[in-house]
Image 1 (cartoon, one colour):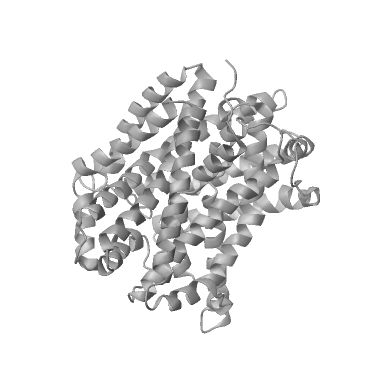
Image 2: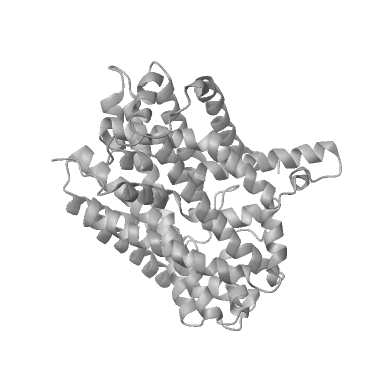
Length: 468
């Protein structure tokens, strides 16, 4: 069977960006920027995106394009004889399932809140009232399951239709609509009375906020915490490490160099996150809301802000439509990775693979749904409920360790090797991968990834040991 290909370069960029653009951009990015002081922290994230996450994104694309396979066969095709890099494919496959097992539930929340906004469920409610609606939804397993199943069904229908007729066609429309909705919401937010303070907080760097504290020790502790947070955010924003990006590399030709394409994808990723901030921070400051309100910012604080605006139901509906598009773009992209894995590994037809994995995913997503109600008593100390455990296993383990695998595979003699990687990355027109970074990529980047991995485990281990 001939390898499917994208119909256009734009399709590749938008779908790859769609995989990267997700809840990390529009849910986590705004509140974490609010917690760490605004513009200065945004610059820190962009810095680490360029020096930390971007090289690994290029490597994922290169491994996919050189092998013409997804993660199921890419390592088998490129690894030296007698090595076992291909065993990572099972971790990548399981990691993508882990991601979808909780991502489908949270995407369902976006769809549910879009429907509730359209029906006026938040009209006249303050934050406490919206909190009640949110908690009522979490306590209702049937409602949660229905919206989760709708999310899974969308993924199945789109991916089953094929790469060009389904994924590329739908993603182009969805991403175009996402940017239109974003632009409309940005204009509305920045023209609110009092929005100027939010724009100043968000766009005018104050590096003193990265060194908050009354003593030098406290100041450096604050900075170290901000650096770790920025590294983690940059890494997770582009979704590298689980092979989701290598599948899209396998669908493109060699007309363009991969460093330039990776910059385009990362640029769109950052643009969406920055535009999300242009909606959220002016709105928060205009209505006297704390911008660092944590994960509840999107589901509790912002609906109450929209409810205070003229035409609040419309703005709330548009906001959660944007959130739904961002989340669904990731669902479709990751589901394509899962389906393509089954096609490459076991020779499944696309239709069969899409339906079988859709059923499996629906069943495996139920524990996350039930973890907020029927099984709410289940918690792992230091981590949290079922959704938190699934998120931790994926975000704090599979992604950083997977990124390390791709990094070592592309830079060591026992892997694919530096020369082979750079030759593939530089094939075609466009920006070349900087060869002078070899020492940095080979030694410094792995150390940074290990820092992210260890730092993610430290507070949990301390809890388990009773150290607070």
